[in-house]
Length: 199
Image 1 (spheres, rainbow, N blue to C red):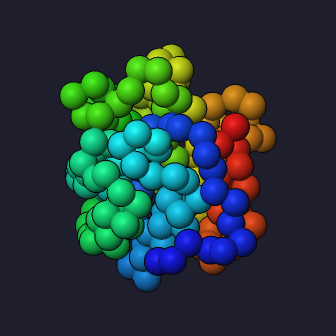
Image 2: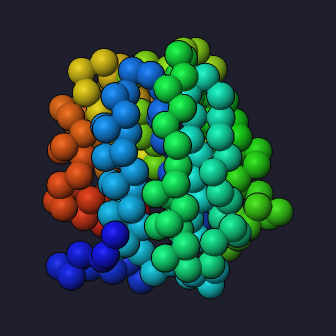
């Protein structure tokens, strides 16, 4: 996926992990569109081990550790890895487990996290988690470390209350509900999230 020539590249350094819902409530073509959005987002950052590092988690009834912050050292390799993320179509949405893995395995020194660099997570989901209380608890544990948590809900099954509790404050900057996955892919939305993450 080529970088959009109109996109402004974020020069700030960050450690960013995308947390991607692939439960069966998401139709597979829509899941692929989620991945395209992630690629669009990656294209707005200066990706390398010295600049912005990217990781990815894929979850449904189980958590798939796609790649860690230290795994790929270039934008091209990150984009290629994202294109290979598989749709798992699990019958539950274990967001709590994904957020636990985010905190205990991804944002750690051994996985490539840097203590002097901002940590950012971008959660993409289409509905209510299986265990909402556990999900909110894990989100809070992540945020207590100083992590900035974006929560993006897609479609009509999203529970606004849950997303509000997951997202960092101010909610207007970190929580978004979109009507459909097509809205997710617009350049305007990509640039909006990139701008917020680049602050």
